[in-house]
Length: 232
Image: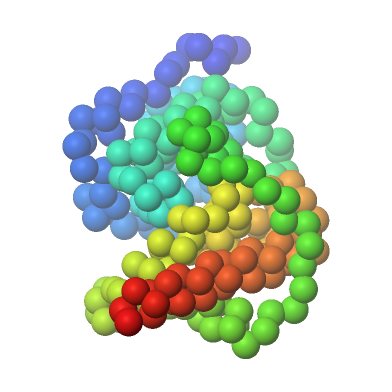
């Protein structure tokens, strides 16, 4: 039986009714699912079974919501974009190319929706990041600070001030640069995955990451100088 995209619209009510959309509310996802994402997408595209769609959402709700919350800096905004992302997945499911991986496709949709949200709120301006160069010692230190934000709760508690300042510095970047920082450091995605998400060559990803870290380090140093001046 041939289904149209309007045959079944997955219910988002169970997510909308939650006033605080926190990853801790949900059980951890099985690291070894019984069916691959791509097979689940194929099955949903053919049969439009809401249970298959909900299974996809369950697999990514913790990971993707955390990504969006860090990206947007607001849990309610992240929830809105999360739901919009999976609504787009439903509406565009026939556009998913066989042989492709679902995760980069999902992140591409989520990232673009997050950037669109930021643009609509006029919080950021887009800039080019096509130039890259080797990182110096100070930039390497910034990479370490970014990586440290992935530590466990105890380690994070010991470095709350640094983490807060890093987030403040990241918030001053434009939307596309924040997207890159989030994917590369907070989500820890490989360059190949980021290249697939952004639909650019791996070499361009590397170049943009170098430039993004350098720009972030400049902001960090400026913030440090301002703090030191204000403390005098």
